[in-house]
Image 1: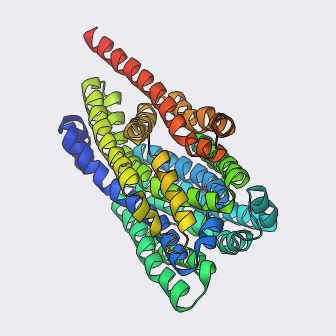
Image 2: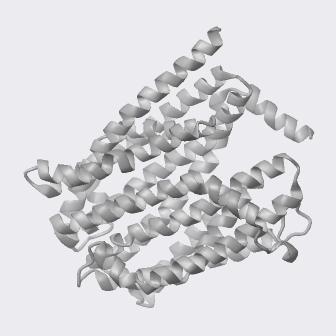
Image 3: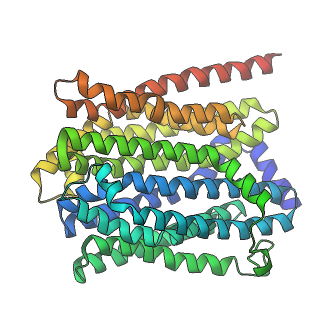
Length: 455
C-alpha cells in the first residue's frame, strides 16, 4: 500500500518533465527496438536475396496489418481489463484473464493463420503481386502464417507483462527478439542460403525463443498472476469484454490494412513492382520514427490520465506541451534525415538496383514532407485516449488513414501529370489535413481546461 501511495504521489507531485522522461524512455527504447526488428529484416533480404525480394516483401504489408489487427484487439483489450482488475484487487478474475488471453491468442492465431494460408495466392494477386514478386511474397508469408499462433501469443503475453507492472521484462522480451533475429537472419540468409524463407524463419524462431521465456515467467506460482491449468478455459464475459475494449484498436489496424492494400494496388497500376518495392522500403523507415513517438505516448498517458482524474488540469496541459515538443523534435529529425540522407539510407535495402534506389529515395523525400507536424497528430490521438475521450481519439486516428488518405490515393494520381507522383504525395497531404484537425481539437480542449480552472 505504501509503495502504491508513493507511486501515485510521484504522478501527482514530481515535475512533469522529469516524469515524462522517466516513463517514456523505456517505452521509446522498446518501440525503437521493435522497429529495428522490421528494418533489419528488410536490409538482410535486400542485401542477401535481391531487389525483387524487397518488392515481394512490400506486398505482405496488408496481410501483416490484418493479423496485427486481431492481435491488438485481444492484447489491448485484455491488458486494459487486467489493469482494472488488479486495481480492484480482484486477483481471481485477473488470473482468468491471463488464461483467456492464452486461449484466445491460440484460437485466433491458428484460425487466422490457416485461413489466410488457404487463400494466400489470390490475396497477394489482389494486392498487386506479379509473376516476379509473387514467389517471394508467398514464400515469406507462408512461414509467417504457419507461425502466426506464436506471434499472437508472444505479443499477447508481452501486453500482460506490461499490465502486471513488469514493463522492464516486456522490454527485455522485445530486445530478445531483435537480438535473436539479428543473429538468425544472416545465418539463414547468407550462410545457409535459405533466402527470404530464412528471413521469415528467423522472425518466428526468435519469437519462439522469447515465448518460452515469457511462459516461464508466467509459470511462477509465487506471483499473484500466473498460469494455472484450471484457469485455461474460455469465459464468455471475459472474452466479450476483452474484444469490446480492444475493438477501437482493431478498427484502427483494420483501416491500416485497407490503406496498405489500396496503396500497393495503386502503386502496381501506376508504377509496377519497383514502385511497390520503393513504398515498402519507405514504410519500414518511416515506421521507425512513428514508433518512437508512440513510445513517447506510452510514457505520457499514465501521467496525463492520473492528473486528469485528480483534477490537476495544469499538470495535464504541462505534460501535453512537453510531449508535443519532444514529438516535434523526433519527427523533425525524421524529416531532415529523410530529406537529406534518403539515398544512402535506401541503398542499404537495394544496392544492386539503381532504379529502385532512385524511386525509393524520391518517394521518401515526398513522404516526409509534413513530418515536422506529424508528431503533434500522433500525440493528440494518445492524449485524448489517456483522458478518457475515446471518441475523439478514434476520430483522430481515422482522419489520417480513412477520411483523408483513402480519397487522396484515388484523387491525387488524377490531378498530377504523373500519377505515381500523386501517390507519393497522398500521405503528406493526409498528414497535413489530419494535423489541422488535431490542432483545432487540442486548442479547444486546452481552453476548456483553462475555463474550468478560472471558474
